[in-house]
Amino acid sequence: MDLDAFAAEHGPQWRRLGILLARPRRKLTAAEVDEMVFLYRRAATHLSIVQSRSPDPDLVATLSQLVLRARARLSPAPGFRWATLGQFFTVSFPGEVYRAGRWCAGVAAGFVGLAAVLIAIVASDPDVALRFLSPAEINSLVEHDFEAYYSNNAPENFGFAVWTNNAWVSALCLASGVLVLPVLYLLWSNVLNLGLTGGIMVGNDRADVFYGLLLVHGLLELTCVFVAAGVGLRIGWAWIAPGPLRTRAQAVAVAGRSAVVVALGLTPVLLLSGAVEAGITPSPLPTVVKLAIGALVWLAFLGYVTWFGALAVRQGRASDLGAFDREVLAPTV
Image (cartoon, rainbow, N blue to C red; front, top):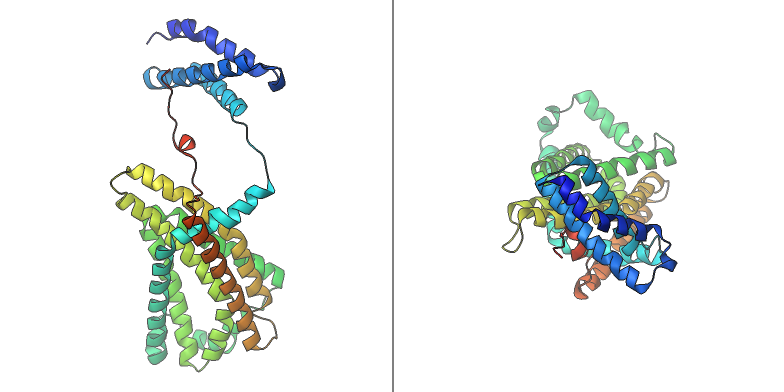
């Protein structure tokens, strides 16, 4: 393609679009707005043609900037609104978690079941724990380390460390979901750690300390991990089995956008979990009271996701991008 001839033929249209974009919005007439829409569509088509046939860097950059400016003028961002934030936490986030509910429940069932088996094996056979830890390390864990872990540091520092660590684990589950195996490895690492520690504590008659501390924050914390892992594995399954009406790229894109919504929504939930672990778990409150607080927070989260998520699904309200924003369609007029 002759770029000079192409630019000479369509250059007046590009310059006219630039002139219209330079004018204040309130000074544009209705006819000029219609003209701007037409020229924007033509410029988008020209950009697509140049990129596909003769991608000259300078011309591509010029047309890209022009098209982006026109699009921003014709569909300006609404800016921050409290209603948008409210919609995110009442529709988008719970809706996406609810839609991935079977994946999350499957991860939870597998995790808890395998952890229970490992705890039983380690508790019934002391030699199993000795393959991982020395007798001195086991004694230190039982007598001091497990309980001291929750109170060795200042609550605010410990809470922040817990929050960032759990957020990192959840982010890894979501980001590596398309590969499947990294998510399974992360889950197995946590199951092994939980099973080994729990088995040692239970086998040494410290089950009350183990469950009395772990369950206070662990109910909500592990639920967040199950959600992240379930949504991450759903991305991997979208790549494996995209369905008859979508390409793999489209299926992964939809699942990936859902994962971004879940990642943002889990951030404050993990912050709450970290606050419970730092402030309630090591507190001098009676164990029954601490367990009641942890269970109440956990049930509140489950109720919130179930109620608002089911409502969003019944009403057909999704958090995904509109069809126009999902892929770039070059106009042909």
